[in-house]
Length: 135
Image (tube, rainbow, N blue to C red; front, side):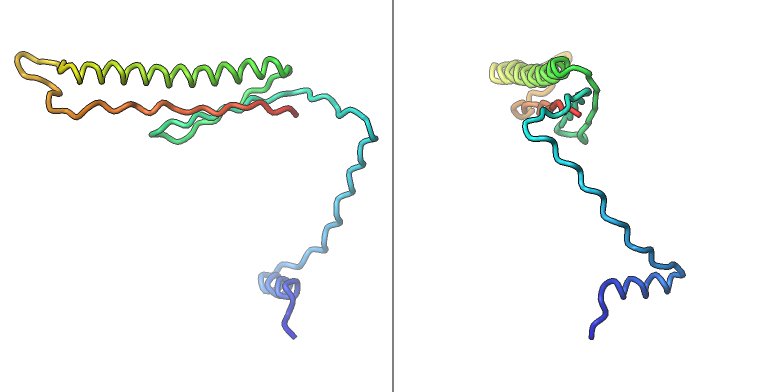
């Protein structure tokens, strides 16, 4: 008959000089809420914002609010900032592309700088994820 996993664990613990702990009792069940009862109101809301830049590791921050509306305003502001950064990157790319297409190049003296460069590449704007979680 093959030994059970519990028996093998007991042998391994005995070999290490440790004794097996008795099993812990299962946690008591959580009583169900009364039918039709409203859940308790959330007292804190956490705004979690994660920035995902193209060339760097992600960055996450958390802020606690005591009001759902304030948390939502913060979330909307973070998303608007992400949209602004994307719009700025697109505008800078459009300007650089127009100058490149028109043949405008920078000069130092009579030497063209960047005249042999390839067409400009749009910079990747960071993406933002923002959510409010009540607790």
